[in-house]
Image (cartoon, rainbow, N blue to C red; front, side):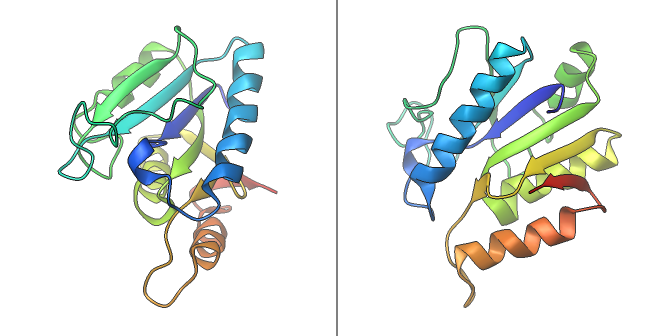
Length: 160
C-alpha cells in the first residue's frame, strides 16, 4: 500500500473499456483499504472535447467508493502532473509512495507512473488495476501486460 491512492479517469464516458466492471470492483477494494488506513485518495478527472466539463460522460463513475474527504483534481492532459498542482498536493500531504490505478493504461496511467517517478515519487500499481481499449492490433489485456512489464522495476513496483 502506498501513502496515497491516485485513481485516474474512472469516468462515465470511459466505461466501455476492457473489463471495466472488474477493474472498478478491484479499485473500490483499494479505495476501501486506503480509507480504512486513513490514507488519502485522489481522483483525477479528465476534461476534453469528448469528456466535456459538467457532462454525464465527464462525471466520475457514481459506483466509485468515494468519501467527502477524498480529493478530486481536474486535468486536461494525459499527464496528471501537467498544470494540475498534483506535485504540490502530494508534497503538501508529505507523501513519497503513490499507488496508481484507473485508465487508460498506455496513456494516463503510463504517464502518471513515469512522470511521478521522474519527480522523485515511489510509484506502484497492482497488476490488473488499469484498463484500456484494444488498439493497433493488440488486445487491451496485451497492452496492460506489456506496460506492466515495462513499469516493473524501472518506473514502479508492480504487485501481482
